Length: 114
Image (tube, rainbow, N blue to C red; front, side):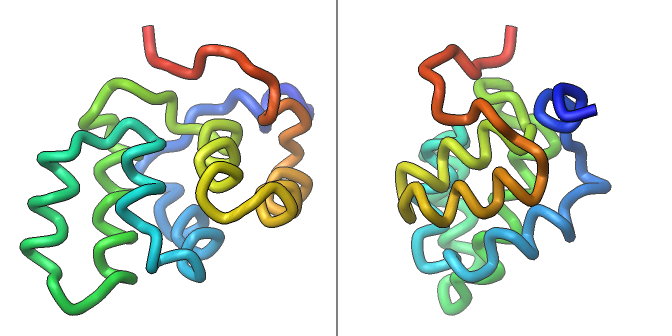
């Protein structure tokens, strides 16, 4: 069960759950997005379209990631925890990883889509 939770691909139907976990880090939405493989041009467009709301930017960026627009990073809890660890710290990422049964997010493995 834990392996399935770790590797299960997330999709647009998971947006509210993912956003709930990430909302508090909205001030860093752009760096989290870049770590998730969202293209810098997409980041710029999201920022242009939502200049006054980091939360809306985070929501839009996560939606793009979950829809696999970038096709560079597997949308699952593991890759999200890796990105959050890089931007907001290991203890926060550990809490989210534990909640979603991700036991291996800090291993150095390729998380790119094939």
